Image 1 (cartoon, rainbow, N blue to C red):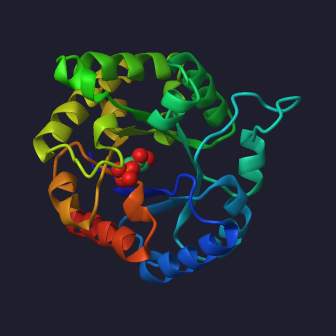
Image 2: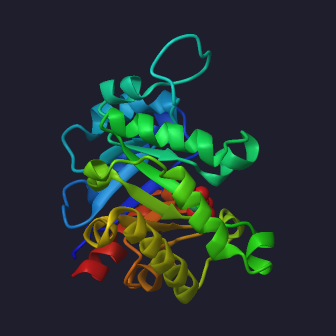
Image 3: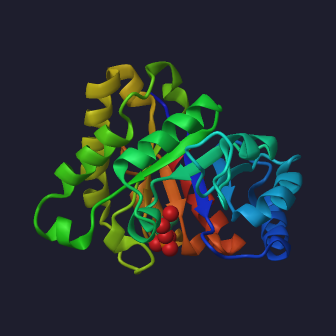
Length: 256
Ligand code: 13P
C-alpha cells in the first residue's frame, strides 16, 4: 500500500494576511511545482482568502485550523465548513491539543466536527496524542486509542480516503523535544491497528498518519523513514519557507 507523504504547516496564531502572502509566495517558489509530496499550509482564518488566491496556480493545498460543527446560524465568531469550501480549502485540522487544552474540546465535540467536515467534502487532519503525565504513567496507547475510537465514531467507510490522522504527543509540541523515531513508529503502528479494527485492513492501510511535535529538517529524515509515518504536521518550523521546504525535501527523499 503506497501512501503519498503529506507535509502540512500549522501556522497557529501567527502571520497577518500580508505576512502570510509573503510566506505563501516563498513556499510556492520552493515547493509549489513538485508533486511527489503533497504540501498543505494552514494559515489563520483571516489569511485564508489571500492565501487561496496565491495557491490557485500551484500544487500547494490550503487547510484551516478549526471549524464549527454547525452548518450555519447564530454562533458568533464561528466559521462553517461551507465558508471554508467557498475559499477552496481542502484540509481542516481538528482536535488539535491546543483546542482540547485551551478551548475545552472533548472527543465528542471533535467527532461532530469531523463528521461535519466530511459531509462537506473537507479532509480532516484529526489530531491525537498523550500528555507528559499520560506517557509517564504508561497510558499512551490507551489514551490515543480512546481518542481515535471516540473521534471517529460513526465515520463512514465510504469517506476513508478523506481521512488523515496526526499523532502529536503534547509534550513534544513547541518544546523542542521530539519523540524518537521508534516512539513515533510504535504509536503510529498502534493507531493503524485501531483503524484496521474499525474500517478493515485495506482502509486502515490507506489512511495517512502524520507525526507532529518539534519536527524540523534536522530530525525529519529519521521520522519520515518509519514505515507508519506518512508525513508531518509542522508548527514552528512551518513559519519559515526554508525550514518548511527542508521538511518537504526530506519527505521527497523518503519516498524516492
Ligand atoms: P511544533 O512543530 O511547533 O512543535 O508544533 C507542532 C504542532 O502542534 C503542529 O500542529
